[in-house]
Image (spheres, rainbow, N blue to C red):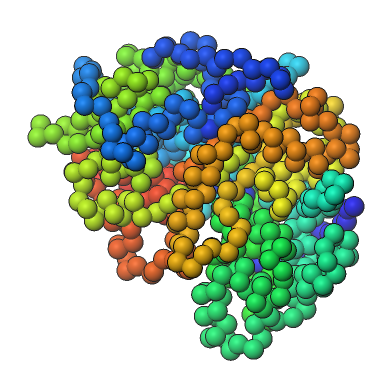
Length: 639
């Protein structure tokens, strides 16, 4: 079934949270649905023929990337002896994610092209969780998101905007990116694009296409769509009243009491207590929140959920309706984000190309960065001023009396040591106290406080797009399924990349899973404890388990259009990201700290020749926050 609602019908309740909309594990390489080939394992620093983006199976936090760090963090284990290399750098950077690459850029820009920089990363690819998944079929290349994806250009600081300009991403190119984004791509927040909801039933999913986001915000025709859903009649009536603003569910409260309520009660408790919805209906309203924040409506207050993209602002009386009306004026300019077809992986590729031009000999800039093939053999050469060393887990960083920093790391099982004049920790905050045990206890407590939000992004290579094209939308919310969002991969024709031309071409399905429980938490269980449990869940889930869930979900959704998972699925890549979004603080758990006293502010304090740069240190899970943190850290080390 489908329906038609125009762009201007969408209310503005999500406008305030629009900047965050659609924010934004490797063991075997699949060659067919039933055959696998052993993944090539390069010798130390010999990357000939090595190309991580094309690996399938478990990616993100893959085998070989986390074992050394877990031994250090969980059991205090690390090598007792290291082989000292005859290598000294002006700057050592721990982590080759966005902050680490940006720190190398800012340092080189300030100190000059002769500055010697070493970037160390525990993964087999650079970019942090801005992962690139690449597939090939019938002479065509397909790419998709393995993690971070959006460029929220309007929010960038001068320093972050200048970095983007330095690597060729100026406003003109971003406008070109918008022009070359398919008009029907809902993944970028295009409000005109069809987006639907898929609800499971006995004979497969009920697929509702059209513009589901508009329905949730009470646009014209929303009540007819609700009436068609496979839900109890009483639940349909309540949703109609809630989404349409037909009732102020907080009418018995004064304005001050209403303000206190929306800032102290969870969104899901409000839906049950005031709206009267059944707990079984809540996933329908939580799916968008899970994708935007990685948390459920049990973890966020009413105000946090609504300002972050949740529905229901029209049901809060005149205050909510006025806010929705004002917010609608900003939707066109704020909600439509920019995105490379492989997400922010191409931003990381541009940074690496800028630092090590030989790594991308055929790339000239953003105009062909997506299609370019990188030469990983050029990342760590002795004659380069900037070296990027993958598969290397840092286990110790300390200042020496000789005005140096000593950096210990494990590279493919071998314990090694280098020195540097300065070090920037651009890794996960929670691991830094174990790497730098000499830090003050208060600083280590600040670093350990936040718990990153885990998530899983899967990409599924399909023989063609015939079945999905019949579903009627480019993105579906799937509130009751393991993967709560299912979309086509970004159809953005920039960077020398050509997306599928029509349904007969091979295509990639992008699927998002939040492991956060949707059950009401037990009393006394904090959001951070729930995030830890969610992280444990994805670490304990095997690739084979994810594969079975993916196949079952897609078969139930698309089988009615002729889809057969056994023959149509060509490869599956699961990007397991246990340490994902930076912890942003939530009202239900975290106090209002005085300026400078929040855990992330205490944790990021300069420690001699060691500085901290990551999104954790900004408590903001966005790429520009990573750039801002890198700039701050470099300034600390170069004054």
